[in-house]
Length: 144
Image 1 (cartoon, rainbow, N blue to C red):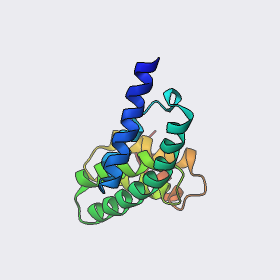
Image 2: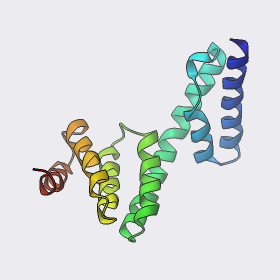
Image 3: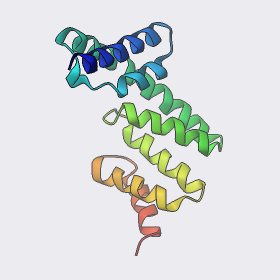
């Protein structure tokens, strides 16, 4: 209906405004909740342009900051950043690395039950990943 269409259009406009203001993460968060099926063709084109411009940047920045946090032993911070990275880029060249360090962060916090399905996702979704051997090791260590 027109009211829903307007609400979704406003979300896109808010995201555009945030993006122009340099607030990429907030813009990405706003775009993420848009029901793109409710947009007109013109607004849908803007939505697609914004997501393709914003998501990869947010994902890479969050990945890099998350890895730095992991290296510094700030595992809670790393979890938040790496989760954000994966949310916006599941098919980038660093996706399996993002998952690996996300799983390792949970692991380092002693949250083994949370880390195992993430390690498994690397095996299932990224068979060419350089983290396959390590992910398998951690899974085998805590199963059976």
